[in-house]
Length: 312
Image (cartoon, rainbow, N blue to C red; front, top):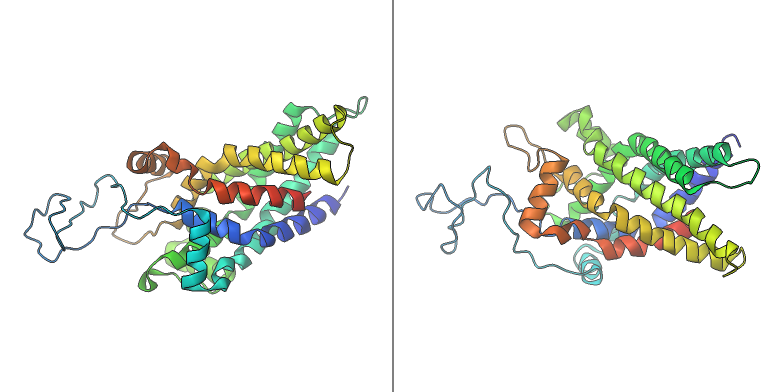
């Protein structure tokens, strides 16, 4: 097979990633909805300085190490989020971070698609020509994990660039491109910041790749074997959307935590919002409820179906 599988997988992934980028951006914005706001200074510091107390205008005090409080931000659906971005930031904002998407797909998806092809060719039973489901899942886990580790710097940059527009102007990072984002992260936060949330990225990628690629193959084989449809465009589209649904359900909770960990600001002398993935998950569930882990599910599933169609 050589480099063919890597090249074909990479090109397909870049096309799929760019064409569905606005949906991915809306997903990121929704996943950050309701996240605990930073402490707000008070106009009168003599009013109950040790407690979070709402006593009127200018009297809200937040303890630095207190558990996150339920945000009062109104929750919006994907359509209203998309319209708000268009109205307040312009149509180009829907493609914020697309340079990072191109780099991420080049590194991450090229690697995972190429490796999955290698594993499929190696582990297909020569006598029967079958590729058992357990081997499909194993191949997806390995290929996805390796690809995610390679592409994590671009993933961090992409999340930050997509989320930037939701912040007040004074708080925005204003990365000019993926190259600028990576350079500034290294200078301001150290090289390790490029792999912030990498364990989550790897876990999510393993889940997505295993569920997406394995279920696509399995759905397609089942449809053809049972005579529901012959091998063609209809079978491909049906299997793709089914695989996209499976991948979305399986990966969304990890994706929400990954987005929040990657997007958090770490400043010298200030405790970070989250100590790690587990801390982020616990604070999110406590403050917003367990369904917060499925924020952005509609744009996720709306993206995964078309993405998988283009990918294959």
